[in-house]
Length: 125
Length: 507
Image (cartoon, rainbow over the protein chains, first blue to last red):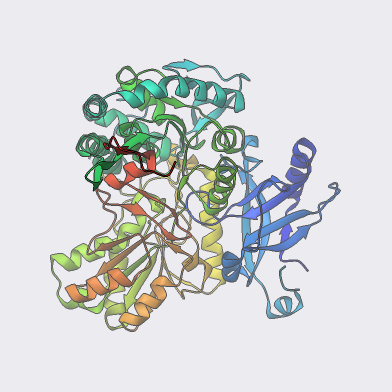
């Protein structure tokens, strides 16, 4: 049980991006325009700090290292009752996310965590 | 009703070129790597032109051009720069319909908005800053009989501007008008979702600006935006967008020790006190329109009044009337002048909105009206349309806390003044807010208590050039609009001058 999962289509895209660019990370955005999109960067490109939490280290088949999934602490306080699934849809991108030139966008789908799931989840780091 | 012909059809007031390159140094320049991407209209989902896919090489060329032009431009007289800005405004005014249709076709918004708001506001913005720069003066301080401190305004030099897709021309002009007025050269990157209409505009006014003063590099954020925002050759970065990219731009700026202005969105409360419903008069009618403003620009506005806070005493009656006002919103072809709500700007934006309609229902919010994708017929079948939607729920729900950027308002009730302010401020953002009341004391106290950069009081979604716009909390840094915006594009030069012939006596 993890806070974040990826769809098979998103996993395929991550394998491709990993092959092209190198180790990857996500930072979940908020706010205007392309807010609410999970932004995908080279690992370390986006500097996380004490204002962020690590929700998951995603294991993607065919990718050697985990893909970290981060969110700002203040945003996580509002999202922590939901499970997130990284999906991918056709789109025209924005921000500096790596997949945009491919004509696709990562997209977050959400569902409520059950009380049992919430109890079983370790606290986010 | 008027239906404008779609670009490319007989009788169209605007024709897009089949392909747009980068505008660098006063001419169109092909992308160094020769790549282009397709640009679809959200009205139909069909591609209508190709756009240069810029990379770091193109950005460097644009920075060369900008640096080549910046010194001379910065030394032109303010009268000369103001005259150019006024001529740009005049040229736009003479081509209002052309620009409005171009903007609608690219962004999907109804042409009645581009005709009455986007383009007229952009025109006025140039005129405002033409006036502001001529009226701006430095200062002097007479420190003592022999010593004077002079303060001069100087341009920053070459600045980077990254433009969002929700108002492709107006948001570009918000950044361009003060930057150019202050004497800066600009490298501008339009959003990849809406990269073409700014070139239609550029084509109209290209002869008015010296080559290299304004350069446009198209492309994706990671390929063109990042090399621009992280370049040690820019003196400032201005960005409108979301929080993660905003933080990334600040990180790059910290490496170069340059300032940024960031506008990163909001979750604006729109507060309706009981006394709004005390009479069924013109003011009540105005307040209902103020509620329905969440659908303006399909909700794709950073200040979308996306949280409706309705006092308990009139909640039922007010919401009945407000729901009918929303039901009367006419959705249809964006090029019809009767259409009030058009297409969302892109497929991924549509998908994001649908994902929020889903989580809103899962969290137990009640759909009062709308709640679905709008399926339109004919040529609009491939476009990206969403029904205006009212949710009722609780401020802790994600649809109350996140910017959906669609025609969706999340409504809750409040008991009294303190409760209203508590809910309004229970947000990580603080960009806009609305307060509706017939009591001026309540209006004043609410406006001062709300943690937001702008509180519309008995109005909403007005964007005059001389009212400061910007965010508290995570909504950003700095302001746009108003003459204070010139400060964001200027250095302060202090000349500290002694008119005494005598030494100090230290050495």
